[in-house]
Length: 287
Image (cartoon, rainbow, N blue to C red; front, top):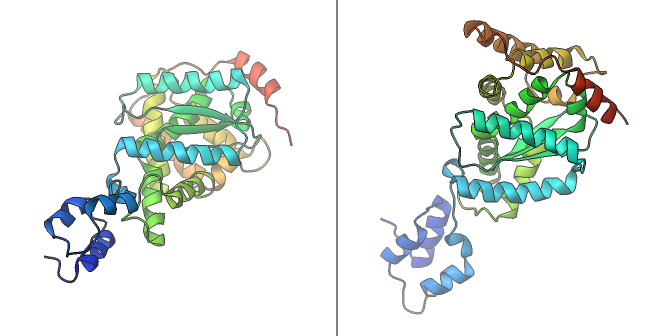
């Protein structure tokens, strides 16, 4: 039971992040002269779209991701190279169509970022971003596919949502917030562009990504091979892709162990001289 005045009860319901706010208010008759339910919903539209970030629906996640994507697109330079975008989009579609996804209802959007740094990232709702520097650094299409698969793995694992929930709790907005809340959009943008994933999230995305590339027929060893190449700093220093991630050697060892235990030999996409000829000349490292 909620004691106190009607106004106090409403405030407590908001503080509790109660999804059933409207129904609860109906169970507590308003005193004479108070605003009507219609007035409440007009002046407090978030009463209709209160979400608990730990239980957000896929539809709300996509809506939030779309707003975050709009913000990200203002902060990075999305490539207009049609061939590069087709390459990444084709790989993305091959991976999601070949895999037994846990969240098949998420509509994926694959985009290329015009940036020579070796990096890739993803945000909730199915948005994946691959830098042109990553395309140029890969030795073959299987290695690039492993990066795309890893980012899909983050979305499958709801890692960005978990980060958003933690950040929102820290700022006191996790319990009562709609998907249109600009605070959540700003937090989600910062998470995608600036904040590192947890160690557990990276290992989980690696595991999921490895499953995806093997299901799609790509060589499993492309994933640890590419990580090993980047960890050596073949292209000059530790790439951005690793600067905010767990130690690459730990991830490489874990992947090699999974490959050995499951006897994941063979696969396509390794011997790809055409890939190197086309994409290194197109996106050779530039400043």
